[in-house]
Length: 73
Image 1 (cartoon, rainbow, N blue to C red):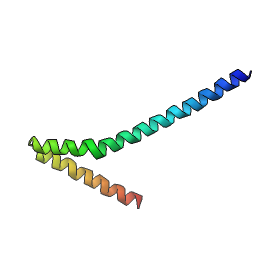
Image 2: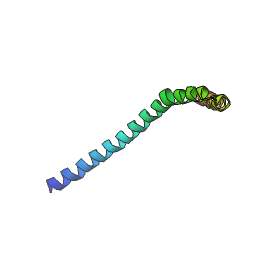
Image 3: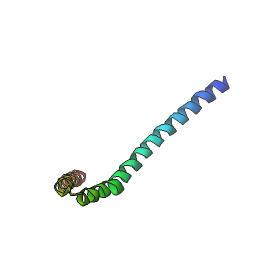
Image 4: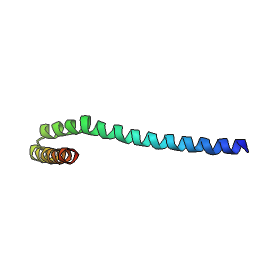
C-alpha cells in the first residue's frame, strides 16, 4: 500500500517537473530567437539585398513592441 502511494506521488512530482521543464525551455527559446537569431536574420537579409523586406519586418516588430509596452504600463 505504501509503495502504491509512493509511486503515485512520485509520478505527480515527475509530471510537474516535466511541465516546468517545458515552460522553461519555451521561455529560453523565445529569448534566443528574439535576442540572437532575429537580428542575425535581419542583417543577413540586408546583406543579401532584401532591404525592403527586412525594413518591413523591423517596422512591424517596432510597432508590436511599442503596443506591448503600452499594454504593460
